[in-house]
Image (cartoon, rainbow, N blue to C red; front, side, top):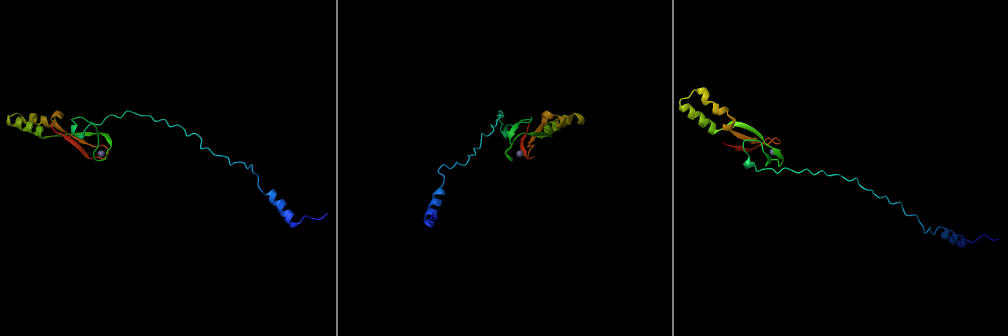
Length: 126
Ligand SMILES: [Zn+2]
């Protein structure tokens, strides 16, 4: 019994290494189903114009920081309050009484400012 030649041996080996045609495909990793995100949509109140602010806090979009804010209001005695004070003083009324307009909210200007950036939004003058 002669040993197989080198040529025969190598051919036999190559057949064995020819490969398995039925290679298992790599497992496919499906990313699965993403958890559904529930988006709660809240109806946004419509901001009013800064110029249409009156003597009460209003919901506006700040022109400085572009945020939707409810304006802070500070009441400052305006020119109308001072005029009323002077008129009352000229009428000879007592001084304590003529200072009333300076304390009355309805006589004061409303200074609106942004609670977010602190900048002045609008001054509502009487
Ligand atoms: Zn702002």
